[in-house]
Image 1: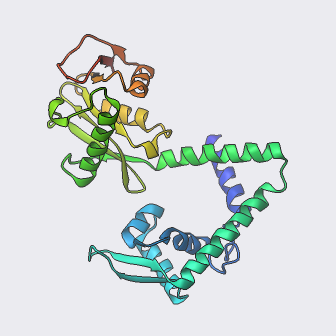
Image 2: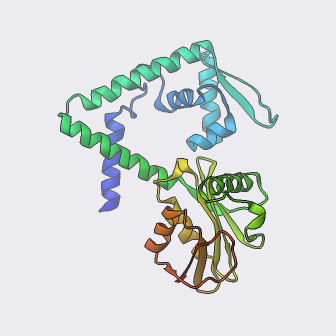
Image 3: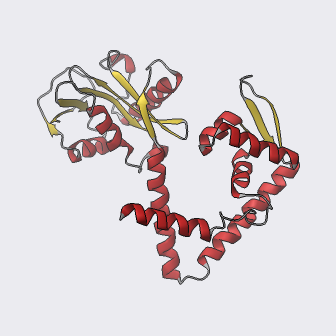
Amino acid sequence: MQIESVRSFNRTVTERIGALQDSYLASNRPLGADRVLWEIGDGTDLRTLRTRLGLDSGYLSRLIASLQREGLVETAPGEDKRVRAVTLTEAGRAERASLDRWSDELAQALLAPLSAAQRDRLVEAMATVERLLTAGLVQIAAEDPASADARRCLAAYYEELDARFDGGFEAAKTLPSDDALFLVARLRGEPVGCGAIKTATGDIKRMWVSPAARGLGLGRRMLSELERYSETGTARLETNRSLTEAIGLYRAAGYEEVAPFNDEPYAHHWFGKRL
């Protein structure tokens, strides 16, 4: 029943927004090409664009070539010589502005036949659907803690702790997690969360979700993913009293307060859970 409902929803949306037409809006090109044009914005590179839209490299190359023939985009070697940069021409910027105007008109056309109450319900439902579909785009995988993305996550995590803890936070004073399995969560290729677990003891460390990805259920998902790697049948973690959201998450996930099991200087609460 759920699969049927999703397929029905997809059919209705693609029909209603005109995605089935050869020409999307008034652009005389299909939706895919218009979306690529819009996403280029102030300039990007083909690798970032491919990751952002989840496109096959061959298909993206064909779309870029068609936009080049129209004189709407230009490509050139990027800072990384292995990746080509792509920018909008003056004509491309004008076309993007037209796409924005046409998209606003389409949105108005979707809302116009509805009553005020129906419009509110539709917009609220759309926000919920967008949030849930975005959550499904997040990918979590093991990562070398020395990688650029891992270090980027940890730097943001430590910066947030320093702002929230009474007296600040110094990474040199916290217990190390060098021997832990490290996971990074990515959304459209960008790192948006991390976590680590010492598999031999089930100790979970360095749980963090970017503010940009909060509200997607990523904290609970990362916690569950880390738990899978415990070799003890249990999971343990400690946290600071300032991290009220984290404490609520752990309790909701079945963790119970236990006696301190380490001497982490920044901890006020210790939790355990039988898996």
